[in-house]
Image (tube, rainbow, N blue to C red; front, side, top):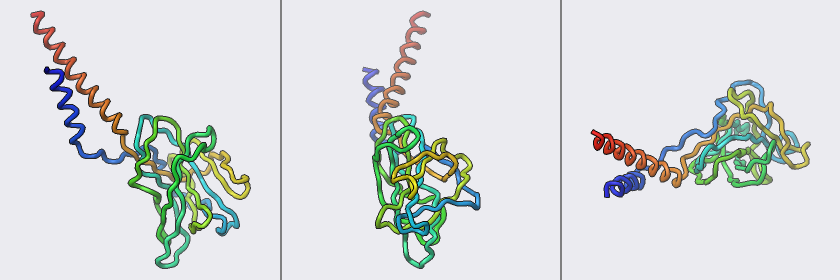
Length: 213
């Protein structure tokens, strides 16, 4: 009966707890270099598209809640927001693999900073993934990303008018990225069961010591 009571309390606490706050999964820090790479669509100032992607690791089952990149919108027209895509890919080795998620984001005119999508609900298992910043046909961002993030992702890739429409590896962009998430609920449940087990084992040990006396 005591074991059942301990487990029940654990489940109740988990069920009644407020949703966990999003934590950082992967973060490069803020790029500070004056140099930059163009981020644009097919009709951008380069005359062709140019996109970027970075690889990051998820160490346990997680719900990804935020995908952001450090972006500057070079359109300073008052009141005109630019549109672009933030995507999540599986790992394809040195480049992004299969697309898992893609959503349209907006960025205010003249804004520079971390921009993207938050309040997401993308469940993933542990493993390697890629975040990508893209400007798809019909989207309007004509901007850039600063280089030399202080803690760049180990593997990066690019996709532009010279790559045949696919991502190619290049590890010297040092683009700024931020990925946030919360533990997947099943993981929280297992953690709660583990905590209950610790309590039960501790009580058993105390009983054994008491009986030995």
